[in-house]
Image 1 (tube, rainbow, N blue to C red):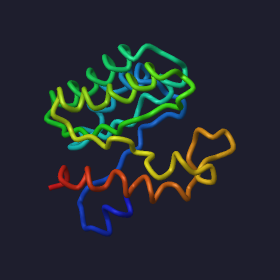
Image 2 (cartoon, rainbow, N blue to C red):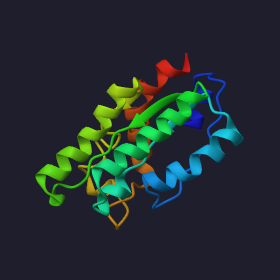
Image 3 (tube, rainbow, N blue to C red):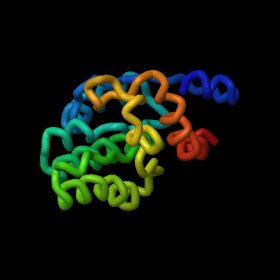
Image 4 (cartoon, one colour):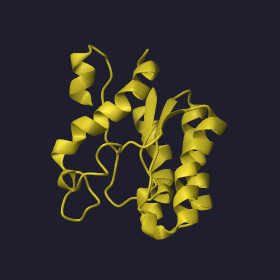
Length: 156
């Protein structure tokens, strides 16, 4: 992302505050200090998959994501929410509710949404590490191409 921003002559710097294995509750707990330290103009939220893989209640995912978005909006920070999906083996109802929570939150809070940021990646085993959870380096351009059209309007 940083290289694409530089290539497009966008004067933004990227701060990657992610922690592997983090849940939405962990992200929410860390967010206030990060907002205070970095004062971002744009916040990209890519959290929830670990909640889903642990079978945590969709309602807790919803509350945590909503709280993070509201915290960013209070400091006039634009938000881009990256939608997640989980494997169907968690059951049809949970899988659908989990995917829908991102759409509903984006609509409620009027934030930009990438419906499924792993589109074009999730279907390909060769784009994942052996754990079948974490994308490899070769997947990153596809992910960026999924995110970029939704991020671009926020850069203006």
